[in-house]
Amino acid sequence: MTTTRQDEEPLVVMETLRIGLLGLGTVGGGAARLLLEQPDRIARRAGRPLRLAAVAVRDRAKPRTIDIGRVPLTNDAFGVVADREIDVIVETIGGTTVARELVLAALAAGKHVVTANKALLAEHGPEIFARAQAAGRAVAFEASVGGGVPIVQALGVALAANQIQSLAAILNGTCNFILTRMTGEGLRYADALSEAQRLGYAESDPTLDVDGTDTAHKLAILVQLAFETNIRPSLIARQGIDRLELADLTYAGELGYAVKLLALARLTASGLDLRVAPTLVKRGEPLAEVRGPYNAIRVVGDAVGDTLFQGRGAGAMPTASAVVADLIDVATGRAQATSRVARLWADSQPAHDFAPANTIKSRYYLRFTIADQPGVLGRIAQILGDSGISIASVIQHDSGDDAPESSPVPLVIMTHHAIQADLESAIAIIDRLDVVHAPTVRMGVED
Ligand code: NAP
Ligand code: HSE
Image 1 (tube, rainbow, N blue to C red):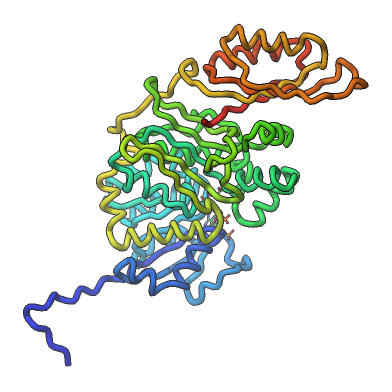
Image 2 (cartoon, rainbow, N blue to C red):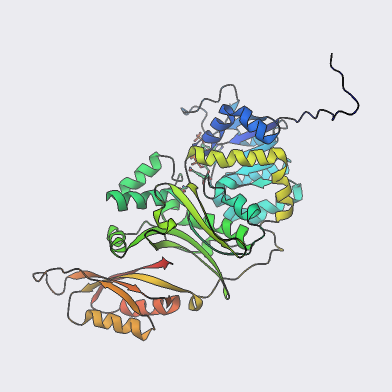
């Protein structure tokens, strides 16, 4: 028999948090594994048990590498969302159609939502967060940016006292893996991409990774957190790695730079300068040395100064780390408290405009494809000079005396800082010259 003294704290038995998991692919499979393999550790951190109550997939008959034991497996995701025995829905289906409907249905049914879906938040953030506010429910999304790197918590909570001044980030594990393999091993682009897909880094449609869309989605989420500004991802100037040539990685290396697909956001006096583009980063700088599927985010805040967050940006267990952390935050009530005050994607936010191109300055890497004739270098230098663009260095390899004068050769120029609008008009003039054989390749330099 147990007795309770009057001065003892009453024993509060916290209820189990019951989880409905939608999707059992790379991310869902990893989250299920962590929940099933580490229940005690997770319960200790959450203050109560977390139980995987149901899992929905598209095809129940598909062979799985994860054994979910006696947890019910269904192909009725809407049934899981409607189940009264479930408190929180984890959406790891991906895409912006069915996933959107499921997330809205979960909020309408009074459930909290954890999602890894950056496309969904970047495209439908205002609608989803308005519904979450109205329903008094939390939407947690640590896994949507940076995989296992806790950048959402960092910007939303730990650095909340700062005015963020700039972000420079490697946000796509697939692209960083491909660039690393091409630069280091001389692997062909297609082979490096297949390897990334095999390892579970890529999206189900890998075009979204390599054309920069995935990075733009993630940048839109970081801009929301860092600058309280709702940016449609389609408005972010974007270039992927799918048209990069190995030659440019090699020339950049000769100049002492690595090429990285960077998401860049800078708060300037004339607005936000945002872009996603292959960018040269000086060898030895932390971002230049980030290899493989790793992500890294350099954040500069007015109080904290320079910070760097780095870790695995894709793959099952790094992403599961973020998903389960969000579930622990829901279990403790931290996610609900943050959601109430953060007012993410709200209409009332103070928004920043885009900085116009005639105010943006950078150094540039340029590769011209020109006829190897007398005076060509001079004509190009003249046009750049007329636009106020100063040359910092030049590479032209000797093509040999036997090569015909008209056959195209590469000419690489690194500029000093130049205004983007001036550079664009100079390149437009140069690309119309009869001695220029292909559109000029241009990449910015992150200093
Ligand atoms: P995935 O491996 O393709 O898995 C998708 C899962 O969703 C599969 O289990 C699939 O079922 C299920 N599914 C699809 N449509 C469904 C439907 N209508 N009803 C029920 N289940 C459905 O995708 P993933 O790589 O895990 O990515 C999932 C999400 O996480 C995406 O938003 C992605 O952007 C994001 N994310 C991915 C990573 C990563 O490293 N892969 C990292 C961070 C964030 P079947 O198994 O039966 O086909
Ligand atoms: N496809 C994404 C990447 C997954 O490669 O980074 C993580 O969001």
